[in-house]
Figure 1 (cartoon, helix red, strand yellow):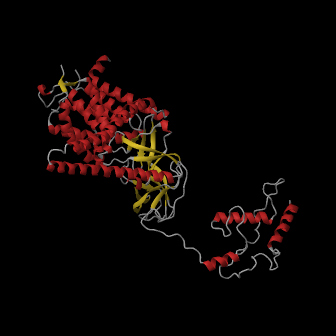
Figure 2: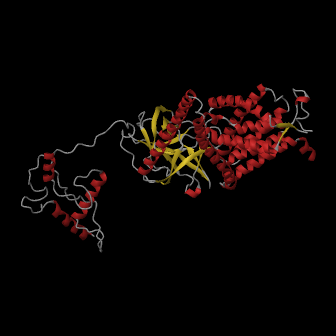
Figure 3: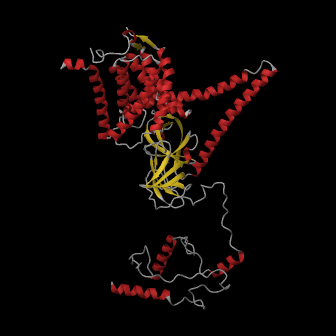
Length: 178
Length: 399
């Protein structure tokens, strides 16, 4: 028994179903999300504000409802992103580990099939992701990059909106865990 | 202990993952070690897919064109409509091709004018991250690309290579946070440090009392040892006094439009910063200096004391360096010192040189008059040239 299983939830137990995915889904969906971020903004620059790997991390975490699995998912996706940048390996990894863990923890308390909550999950975790990354860069690497708050808020809203149809599409790939 | 771990299993897993990544991060920072193998694997895995996507995109546009052409055969009306659609699409494709060809041509022309050895490259895609400002290009280490090389376009500097892999490289745009380049303004020669702020650029290190105009162009100064001197950067968009010096915003000219092709400077060679108003006002035609009047030039030629001395220096020094060279030459000649002859007797450069032959203003000289510094009978003037050997002798005696 974990500390989360013993905590009170706001939803009936029949809505706390745990979902699983085909192994290929675990690999291909994050890969497509990263490729989208690499290739598409070249032609549609305004889509560079979309953080699809983060949304995929959040989705897998809330569907599995297991904080360690969410943290591991975030860690792997973040490290894959790090490997394609010129930054140190681990920056996106740490941030997405925390996001995956938090998303999975939240899914134990709330009904994550709710559209409003999904919007909040997408937008809220994007903002948290940006702030965490900025704070880590300052604290660990000593960078002096500015946190562009208006842009972050607008991008968070955009990611929240995109999370709704994206999660709907990904819902088709899930199957109930035995 | 086991009970503690099982009770806090989730938190333990999280802490283990975070600790592992923190250790990895600390190792990279402390030892400046690059986890190159992981990055090479990742880039090598992603680059072929991106290249494939690019090939599919270009191929699909051709297929779409053929599809529209085959569909226009039913009736005259439908045929005309389809024909019109086809022509419109073709028009768009041709316009795009023309635009691309124009960009490539401009880049080619710029490359031919560039004294540095350069390598053309195409941008494949973005590096992950929101507005990262870092892009993949299709050139890697086998092409001679190295980390830190300058990236330019025909309009000016575009960025810098930040990572190199066998199949691709990463370039950071000038507007990215973390980018820096040493720059000089064109008109007032004000030095500063260009930095990217995510969406635009600003120049730091300019004091409030230093002169700088809005619209003035910045060029690379070459002090950073990355960008060669004389490359265009951009015009000053806004300038105002601030607490820590001038707050200068610059719009990089190379990043104004769509950047899809760039040049990587493999062997950068410093150039000159052109005179003001030439590039900033490209629509203004400036004529060459007018030719001298025929009568005046004839008189000046007749009044000239002697032809230009061997070695290429002109009769009338144009710059400080020319004047200094002329002065040293006169000192050496005046002291009968011969450079490169053994035993070498060094001339005394502290002494005043022989008087320079005066150049009469045009129009005052009489045609056929002897050159200044010569006696009317053609003998050498006794004043300055004779005084110098005496002084040399006395110097030898003193030694």
